[in-house]
Length: 172
Image (cartoon, rainbow, N blue to C red):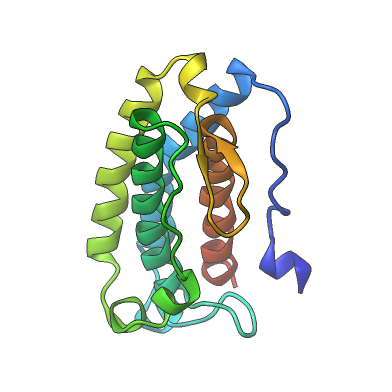
C-alpha cells in the first residue's frame, strides 16, 4: 500500500540551498503540464474514474487536485515575495476533491489551468534570486515557516508524486 500511496517516496525537504537542486525543481515544475497531458491523453472515461489505489482518489480527482493545489502554491509564492512572512490560507484538499467539479467535471479545463499556472509560476521562479528563495511563509496547520526553496522542492515532488499516481492507472 505504501508504494501505491507514495510511489515516488515521501517528500524529503532539502536542508541546504543548492542552485543545481533548484534548477532540477524548476525543470520538473516546468515540464509537468506536458507530462500530465501526455499521461492522461489516451485514458478512457472509465480509467479517469478509476482510483489509483484502494480508498484513493480517481485520476480525474488527481488532475483537478493538481490544478487546485498548484493555483494555491503560486498564490503562496507571490504572498511570500510581497509580504513579510505571511500566514498562508490552508484549504481542505480532501473536501475539495469530493466536490462535484472534482468528481464529474472533464479534465480538459484543469489541464489548461495547470498549463497556464505553470507557465506563470516558472516565470516567477526564474526571476527570483537566492535571497528570494530564502523568504518564508507560515503554514497555519503546523505553524512552521517554510522557505520558498523548500516549497519549490515540495511542489516538484508533488508533480512527480501525482504523475506517478496517474501512471499507476495508465499502465495497469
